[in-house]
Length: 635
Image 1: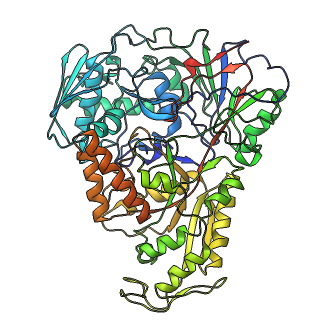
Image 2 (image 1 turned 60 degrees about the horizontal axis):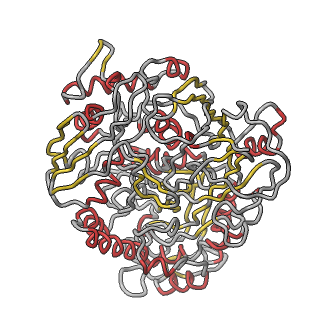
């Protein structure tokens, strides 16, 4: 999903990615491979690239503004609609990902880095970008988004009580290319505001500022924006053929224009000659995205393109991957597929499965106990999963900030510790015995000593309660299934009965994030206990400060974890006034939450990308952005 730490305020659909499936590359780098065979002719005689989408993904929603509530469109805020579709046509104000680092990319951003002075934030747009109808991308287009956001208020899809739009005192276009924001307080981190607030803004063209009755004025008057949003959302929700032929969505400032889209999700884009950003000499002119129903269906085409369909850039299931070259992270792994190069790439994301602290079937008190979370983490064999079903293409996860790609956000204590939660069944048994459980390996543990004192099971856990748990996981990915079954087996060795059930990716994510009853103050039905859909990609909230996933009030905190000290430390990261204060607050929080285990950490898988020989796809972007305007064929 936008996969992706994507977004706050219920924007889960854009933040979760099925581990191992995410072809979330941003221009995968070419690799040296040992496979033989001449590169076949390009799909379009050297001007076209066919790009295989993640199995089950469907691109169908062009409007880059999201709201919640009964009339909202958050279900369309996934990585495919946003990164692979919307961002190709409508560029965000700020672009992230510079090589392997998920930092602000000033070269590809529509504006210079924001300038801060107390409560004032100044955004100065570059003047080389134009809409395809010839109009400049200017301050009015940014105001269009801001005013719509303000009009929607708490219904804004990424609303944050400590951020946009609640923290805005005023926002104005102070000149043609300058937007000035006055915030209500000076107590905010500049890094957080840039990376997790301004990162959400996508300028919108004046041609969209209308209703069914004709032109409107949302760009300069907030009162007009609700009607404009309703009109645009309705137009974006029409059938694929209507989207492709609509004059609304044909006005773009990105490098690509929509040529066609069908009901199955096949998308054909052509290059926008009005695009003002950097492109590669001799770049491709047609970008085709192909939908697939399964890993195997796509892999079959990669293996044998003679059946009438070809793939120039696609992904390789980890279960079919060759062993990685020693120490290789990307670009040095030989492909077993003729005519392809294989790249192993790591996206800026967090791999975990949440506990349901709001569970209504009685297990929540067990999850509340830190000792249990420690014991359960001891049953996760990250190294075994990496070396087994992941075929060596993975990294361990140790805490709320990913170990890789390396960033300044990671505390040295966590970084030096690496995979501190390695498989240790004996340690898990010991923790349970020390806390009042009658441990029966290969049997069923029960609480022998109820109570809250030393050597007792903990608050609200009755005597005789059994460690009988359930987990749902996303189906269709072989290595996730293998990992789930291994975890159940390891748990049984410690006397924990863990039943695992495969469900569709959408069903798992829906259970965790989309169930209104689970979000309600008075919970009446929230029965899932543990859930594994894969990973959460940090986009467009690229700074992993915790306010997106681990704050007690964050809607994307699907398991409902709530810890007073955690909440205070997250607030400290958001309110740090200087870079040093921010680093100190961030590192302290990372260390604390690593030990608290609010979720079950699991391996971070690599995305294995097969690129046809002769195609140069430029620099890899760890922030989950693709840039096909850089892709070109070389001799």
